[in-house]
Length: 179
Image (tube, rainbow, N blue to C red; front, side):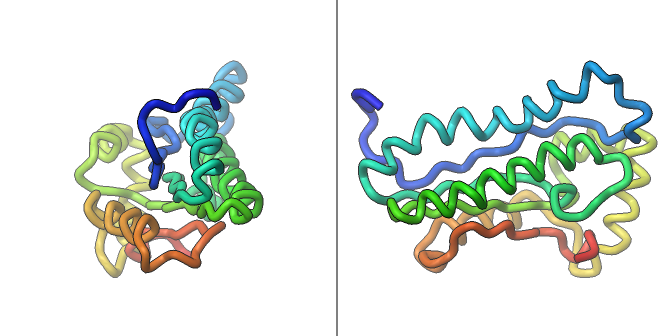
């Protein structure tokens, strides 16, 4: 990277897209398959590609990507989104192996259903997605996740308490997704 004018970069938090309504594979049009997965992957690839050379040069940094529990738990109706999110998780885990030699940590936060977000509201309006949300919430015996709880997981991974953690995908689900 040539002249990076903004100084050092300590942390990158990158989200893996979102806003995609789950639906069974037979309802997904063939022309939607690759663009959906590409869109999810590009949402983290471009920011990481931009900051990685800077972090490598400064020999430190933390990269945290948001993915989804559908990348960990096979979920009916989330075949395409799950594949894209699993791609994000594996990309980050593989990058962690490369990045550790430069003292860069790479992890993922993988929330389940997060109430109080525009995506949650959008999913609740879709009958199929609403049934999935209902099932997840019924299993969330520790409580349905709120945005601040996802932020707390991100802050932990960005902070000194996680200085030796890399290559991990941390589920934040309130127990709503079976693990």
